[in-house]
Image 1 (cartoon, rainbow, N blue to C red):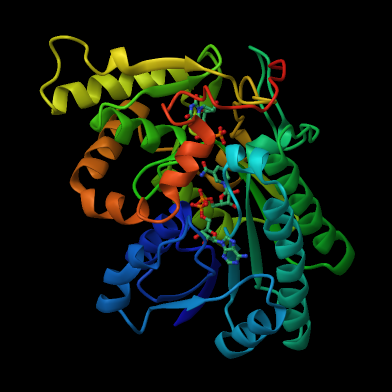
Image 2 (cartoon, protein in one colour; image 1 turned 180 degrees about the horizontal axis):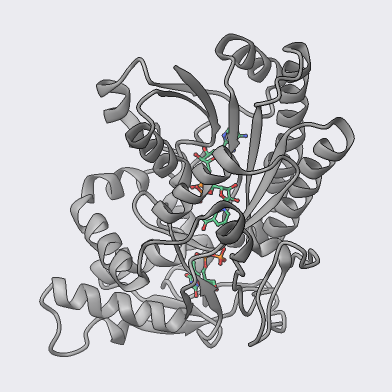
Length: 369
Ligand code: NAD
Ligand code: TYD
């Protein structure tokens, strides 16, 4: 059996990736190393742990704990590492940047040191792979035209994207300097099941359900290129199996939407399902609120390289996958209650203020790019 080590597999994308790989690669075994921050939920994979204990194993641990990571690598001897573990939310990075440096920069550096050390000890196996999962936000903000390619210069705007940019540079340096067989992927905004409800789509779904204000930052015309998480998982599997060490691959959904249009679409999807159609009840919850400082205007990925070189392209249409995502949140109330039972309410109050509209935000506004 082939063993894969996943970091951060109790978070949104990691959970979906592990579920996807266990389903589609019957001879693979997955070890999930996750420290379980507020965003990690080991219970996401409890059914897998119960159904296939020989193929899935959860280890609670920190990527910054080099001894722990090296022991794990020596005992498990994975053929590849897929690195998701990170602090991932831009708004949190604005209010508390240091955790982003500690996890995304120092954590990635320590993980690279540990992985390289064990790779060297094992005689530098030629088929070993390290996939670093990163973001298109490292490229900064686009105007109305153009796309991010793998050669676009890095120009991060937020503490989050700056920390991910630093981690990408470290991964590339490990390949250039030590010949370590690492690859970097930069993807656009994901959506789908198991996403923590601090990000736009799940936050809006739950606020609509509870008829709370829908806080749209700025003028709502910022554009994101939405990627269904299952498409992303298939792209990562493709990079893992067919990608070339030292390469970078951009992964995008080809579904550019303005935030306000996504929110309105969610309103109408939920109004249909909740029988609230008549009076546009949900639309009336929309509030344009204080903009995010340094808010990137537009992201859009040119995914030609992964399409032409590795044969991957997204399969899911945005409208259908968004409707499936809404249905998943409606069907998984206990999951929602569980992930919101920690410090979630405190975060909502800190970021949006007591009335949910950011009136209490004191961070000085920054011109949009
Ligand atoms: P997430 O916040 O949902 O999950 C992150 C996971 O990492 C959590 O389970 C957390 O417990 C774990 N973690 C954090 N610090 C750790 C540490 N020190 N050691 C071990 N585990 C730790 O994030 P996500 O949305 O699933 O994103 C996964 C990766 O994909 C991140 O690297 C992120 O930068 C990248 N990414 C995400 C998106 C997106 O739209 N969500 C887009 C582009 C790139
Ligand atoms: P988010 O899901 O935080 O992802 P990212 O910042 O990584 O792109 O936000 C997606 C877009 O939605 C972004 O332009 C900010 C905007 N947004 C709001 O308008 N209101 C909100 O409450 C949140 C969380 C995001």
